[in-house]
Image (cartoon, rainbow, N blue to C red; front, side, top):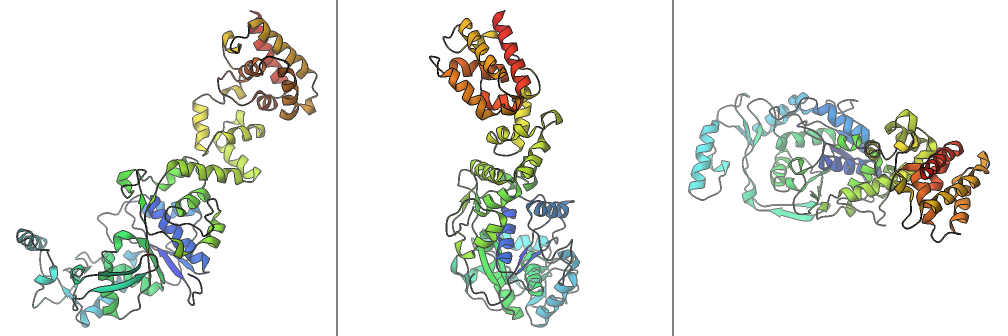
Length: 479
């Protein structure tokens, strides 16, 4: 991708047939990064010609998903542009224009057959154990096309095709890959095989990035390029995203989630971009954590992989946690507080929470599990929970009273986790085991088997509440 002598124009062209999943999103990320890296244009186009499969609200969902990720486009259905409109259903005149050119050049004809007749021909081919090729059944004198019948492309030159892909290198397919295919359906809408070629031509698209499932159809595309005598764009085949077992391509039926579900679960958009970019591509320096801006600087089509990459929730969580660590303190506070009830919105609690989460949705799990209850109400526990291993209740009581005495003498302004730790460590070092003091203090503050260190808890609770909870534990031991 270095030394490009023409403006790079990429397009992301999803169909509005449901939610956006990670496979769609990764393609959009690469399209976006490729254009931005080369100071080019990134176009959002909606391929909505398959009306039978269109799902209401999908276009809005696509736009919302991309905006959440920050993949801003230069031209699109919501912002317009010099090549408007950007919905295929609104570009029918363009397809008719080029369809007439193909008809005039003898590369297209009206399909006179009914679906039932085509099915009969197909079954006969199966019975004779030969591939069904529509070109073997071309009508000798097709009717004039008036839009009521499908318009088919006529493959005049039955030949092998060769082409270059910027990722896969030199590719080729035999003549058996060519057949007469539908350009425009009887409902007046074009097929993908025709529409995207015309759109890319009129929008000046220079680089087409798409999945490996399109390799088999490429000879069809090439035959249309040749028939219209137009220059081919650069082809970039992307590797598939494999499921967690690495055996099967991940799709909606295999657990691929709506990308906005990740937003609801508290993932950061920049972490999603980072993680998905790495499934099938890697920077030269093998850097694993980068911002969207850094991705643009690092991105190079030459580093897209040929083989598929495996989706892994644990890796995504790790990447997201690394991005959480990078957040400025004010932004981090905003994110954390969005998940906390008002009574817990204390800045001192943020480091403790961040230490225990990989995504902000984990805060909800902590709340539901009662892990944060002790920050705003007295913990409930039994006397035996305060006793560390073989330590006696009497010794535990003595240890807590000494700790209370030392903390009471600490000035409010010096009641920090560092000072508290120094005080408690000095006391616990005199004991047979530090746990004889730290364990009962941890329980006195949280009531939990697993919780942050007592010094951290003390600072968050404050001096008054710390002493109050030690008094509660001491009273319990005195009973």
